[in-house]
Amino acid sequence: MKFVIRDDDLNYFSKPADIERWYADIFSKNIPVGFSTIPFVKPVSDVYTAGAVAEEKEYPIHENEELIAYVKGNPLIEILQHGTTHETSGGYEYAHDVPIDEAKRGRDELERAFGHPVSIFVPPHDWIGTSGVYAVEAAGMDIIRGRGAGLRNWILRPRFILNFFRMLVFKSWHFLCGNVPAYPYVLNFGAHKEATSYRLEDPDVFDGLAYVHKKKGVFVVVTHLHFFTDEKKEQLMRLIRKGQEYGAEFVAPSKLFA
Ligand SMILES: [Zn+2]
Image (cartoon, rainbow, N blue to C red; front, side, top):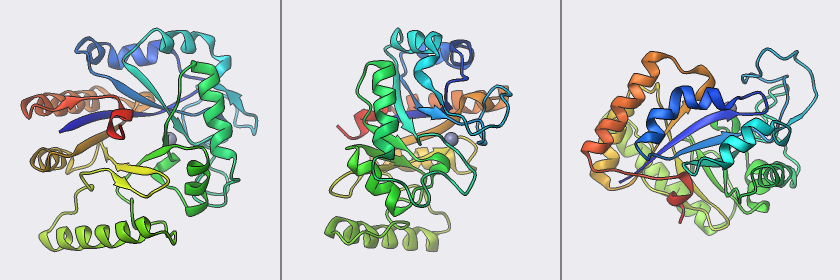
């Protein structure tokens, strides 16, 4: 079983101390963490922006030199792309019409800033519409999302149709059994792949880990750096210990798609 930690909403306003505070002990166990990073955060959003006035302005991540230097010096951090601006006015950013080059615009900013290829896209609020999928495919990236993979987009392509029915059967069967886990394997849609994830707060997150262990699949847990509490951190550590008991391999997110 592969075990991945995905922490969301890193942006221009984040500080290295925010990461160190919650992850120093995890890094000391040699466990990698994927940070879903917002390339051009807008303070008119529902993410952490350190109390900045809510305005339309974009804050490019490369201007936070302290954060860039810290990430470049930590080989256990992988940068994922989290939307382009994460703005929420007019709905979730990637849920509706997205210009075809919008994902690439964000990806280019992250690669320029961190000096490293970025190959995974995480939609804000785990929500992506079909035009968003096309934009991510145009940028040549794979997707980590919530449990909606396979059923929420409809593209007339054989692999999409195959996965649609695969997920329909999977969800119907588990619905009849009383609980629908996240799909435990990577789905291949032809022009991109998708992995599904649990939130740390999900009531069935430990059941999900046990299920993935049984299925020898991939387990992704989502955390939020700027909204950690001692209780949430303890929950994450319990999950890591359980993963270790199961003999999980703790990997950077891009290893899911390798
Ligand atoms: Zn987010």
